[in-house]
Image 1 (cartoon, one colour):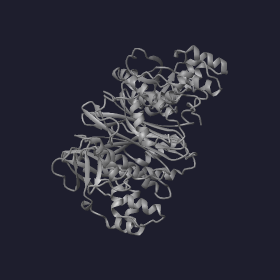
Image 2 (cartoon, each protein chain N blue to C red):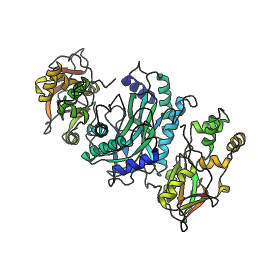
Image 3 (tube, rainbow over the protein chains, first blue to last red):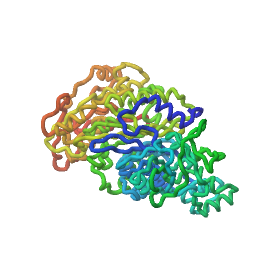
Image 4 (cartoon, helix red, strand yellow):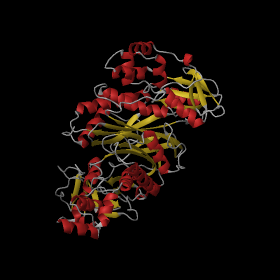
Length: 311
Length: 311
């Protein structure tokens, strides 16, 4: 399984499971859309494991709870929907303090309160490492897929890009400041109203940036069969990202293009771009012999792999 | 956390999270009922950890998948509903073979096919032990709670009782037969149509038997403030349960009353009991100084703790 890798294994599982004709939007998007009496529902699930997705020495329990909830609420946002509830199942080591779990619950509740979602249930069991399994459900008046961008569409984003990635780089080097980037890594602030806003504005495709802009926009590009060409001069660059890049000998654009965990939204629009969104590029047909994908200023971006988690 | 125990910790978390006024049925039932445009949805989540909830030397990957799906589909059944989809998140050790995961997927899909549910998505990540986190969603025309039985209601069940418990006892002693009980432990066969049937017949309370009849019926009794008195002569007793009880020096009734993992349904009815259900007792008001709970032939059942998992 280690040889295969997560993405390939997910593809194998999906192939093994076969057709999902009972679903409106099946596995592979930010959330699935399931028919329901009187409409449909959106559902998305994540599994977080200590050491891989969070570290107790980097983040407080409350921060871990806020981020875990945010990641799942963001998946509903990324369909153009609004989340109504989470379920949270916890695997907990026997020597973990009850306080830690209570503060985790505080963080989960605080993040849910931002969007008005409830924690509807879950499960608790013993396990060797801390495991947090979350499912988010919600609804969209129009669910926006990730594989439906078209040539000629404008590409735009809403939310933060690069802050959490700069925070991850900062923490990885053993530093604890600047706080703006470290806090952004610990507790992201997804643009929760931007998803429904984009859906209402007629977005043609939508995804959230969890693994890095190039990686996630790559899903839109390859899924839609288009080339996305980004204009590097279009990105607003936070002074904090510049500070970190200077200190660590990197470039601000690298954090913006490849940093994960900010949970910005990026989408394609065939009409006006909604207020608060920033236009950063355009989708076009691939040229003869060209593969769908993402370019920056007309060329592939070097070292454009996605966000690396802890291992 | 080990000192507190799962049930107490869940109670602490629920208290910490506070009111869930946005839910129709909140945490603590088999599934939560969440308002949705045009109706409501049911959602339930489970977390299974290798060694605690399943053993690879006892069960094939396909069996583990079938049982994991069954446990969650059963939660929707236990609300009087029908499941439409599962999400499945997997934590997998790096040295686990891809074949095992494919056969797990086969089992999940096979069990979903029994009720016509789809696997809508999930997540895959690396972890030291195998972790399976499942959420089930579904719908009920009338969701039946577990805490709404009334004095005078008849108590009845549908499905198997004791088979899986006898199978667990058999496997625990190192035996691999009789197959009927071992298979029942490995792959339960929940009565998936009995939940909606009970809801339509006006069941006043409903729960599935995952931890043992006395334990789960205890949730109905205490939640509803009634005493449930069971008639031990009313239970059909499988010849296989008798065989195992004889061989292991136990009593058939013990498996029926305390064995878990059969995913039978038990409920209360203030009118006729539906076809295929067996009447096993009655609910009454507690007498002066008596606590709500479950009696067998008018007396507490000795050693009436619920089903013990592997540790």
